Image 1 (cartoon, helix red, strand yellow):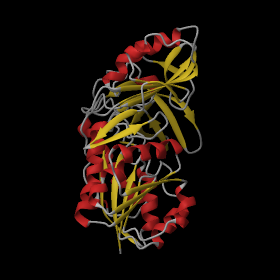
Image 2 (tube, helix red, strand yellow; image 1 turned 120 degrees about the vertical axis):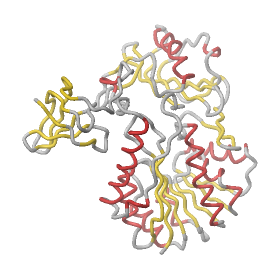
Image 3 (tube, one colour; image 1 turned 30 degrees about the vertical axis):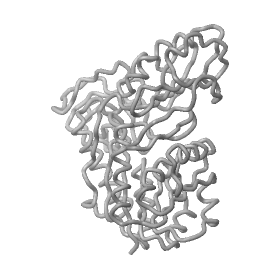
Length: 401
């Protein structure tokens, strides 16, 4: 069955129509005519896969990853970084206009640094002594020995990880590997039954088993002039080169407006609060992750920072207890965005500005709409933190009306 691909949807799939019904086709580009097999159909839409390209786009690149069709983690190995950045810029423009009612002209062009070998963290699943990723929307394992978007240091240790998985003394279910931003120090955390790790110290600086440290220490990553301790369960940006550009955007805002007191919601390991600490009087960071807050407290000491405080709590549970005026709020929520209580709190307080960092432009657009009666969105800047995938980070700057 032939389908003309008209555009790409927000999840990186080609979109066409069959008998007037929307049809989603992975690995297809606008302008392509593809012969497809329908794999799912309901009253609202059809999902299909490409059997043959009748007409290919001039923008199509040859896909070099052998796992592309089964893994599902990367959607844009078939197009250039330039075209991908254009897609992400347009995606955010469309979402903030349609969902947020915001003028798309305030959205800057998407910026990026590196295209491949950027991820400093990988989580490998293990099944029947095979190590790899789960297929998209499935628990079927795709066995891999190299990933194009992982840092080279992580790819280099995959054979050692497979050797450990193959050892009959071990029964491992998951392996997390993380490498430092500015050096090759590498951490591993094994989940499951682990009885033999012979030679592990030749490959890893820090080794955890079921989150318990057995060799080395927590990983230290650098952003700008600051060092940050990161433990296995803590959140830390996966693109080490792009994160400094992202944080510099927040820093420049602080340099321009000179806020006295800053509220840092969903602060993680304290990276943003510490990064801007030289430009402000005081920062209060809040996050619900015990592991992240413990790292944040260590990071404060590691960098000899005196004007940043951290609280371990759900944001919505703690905001009623916040004392004093905060003239700038930085929020970096999870993909679900802000909860209603936090939105109402932000509208009520006397902050003159909000810097909203988002990994999901749809929920960001929703939250910006909810805040629009109190704040005006003055700029939105996309950052391609996740090249070759449909995901995109962005920063929205809001000022009180």
